[in-house]
Image (cartoon, rainbow, N blue to C red; front, side, top):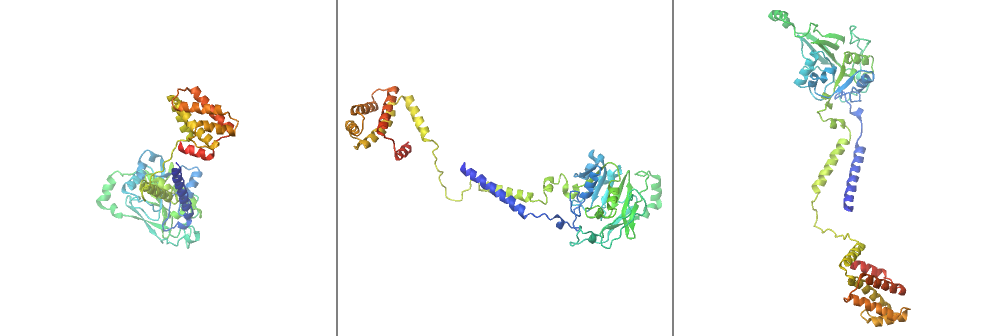
Amino acid sequence: MRQRLTIILTFVVIIALLVILNTLTYVKDEEGNDLELAPNRSTYHSGPTGTRALHDFLNESGYKVMRWRETTVKLLSDSGKKVGTFVVIGDTKLPFTGDDAEAVQEWVATGGRFVLIDRQINRELVANYDGWTITAREAALPTLDTNPGDVSQMTEKVTALKPLQPTVLTRSIESVMPSRFAARLSIAHDSEEDSGEDADEFDNETPEWPSVSPAPVVHIANGDGALLVDYSLGDGKIVILSDPYIVSNGGIRLNDNLQLALNAVAGGDGLIAFDEYHQGKGISQNAFASYFAGTPALALAAQVMLLVLLILWTNARRFGRPLPLPHVDRRSSLEFVASMAELQERARAFDLAIENIYTRTRRVLARHAGVDYNSPRSEIAARIALRSTIDRNRLETLMRQCEDAINGQPINWRQSVDLVRRLREVERDLGLRMRSREVRQAAENI
């Protein structure tokens, strides 16, 4: 048990040292690692490139918001019917598959509202419709030195943009401040589809979507191109904002950026769902590991697993010559004496009990009398009588009765107890008690 306790304590100490080591070596430097070149647009992220401020503001303002952590195919299920607006921000960590993009377009066509906030146009998400094509052109690219938390650096030589016309998306907006990396949207129409037989054939057919103008509407723009565009797709609507910096934690507080984010994201009815599945926070993307990402918990768990595997590998493996296990007698002396007494009582071996006690007493009496152990009992009794007040005849008679019982004379338990009591009285009267050395020897012999 002591050996096992030592092993357990050693294991606990090693685990504690690992925890302390991982805690001391872990340095949380979120802002220093947050780069505009590789942004994290997740609503869980509180750094300059994240969008947690927008999510928390909507939640605290009473809007129904959620983090969508499932594939977009689930938008076509019963849970997707509760979603009124689906928001995708920035270049996602996981790419959209063909099924995901097709599910988004089908969901929009049935009345959903899709908001895409990115500097690049995903052709699978925003496909051409009825001949209209929207393309994005980036003005500049961020570098490793670009600090998304520095407003002056992000908006250097940038002029605030004003709405082109009063619309629902530009309500209560005087100007917005994009970053210098904001893309510009261009809208073009393929006029070849409107000519010849195709045009007549199109006029005779029933349109696939309701009779709403498919032409994109530009809400905010300058001479370089549009910043905010929306258009209808079936019964739904698609909103495109070409700069995530406007809704990010670092830029949402500038000018009327917050109001623009509210108009774009919260302009519809129903539940607002932010796409977190493609940000790497999906339920099927190992949510446990994602939750502890960036903390020393994963490294500590890996080290503990390595330690456990090491213990299992070394279990029962000998690294030296075999040594016999120490034999520990778990029986106590009193337990042995009690067992022998019980056996002698059941076997009615009173002579054996008398022999055990008389042998020790005779040895003590012989030593006290100054004679040999094998001397006659008469000589021992005479010597004891000379040195004490004990009657010689009484002592010699007691010794003879004990020796007769040992040699086979019938005796019962009452007589045995009487003889032992009388032997103890002699020892007490003479002041004879076993010395500590004799006590140890008797215990060892037992």
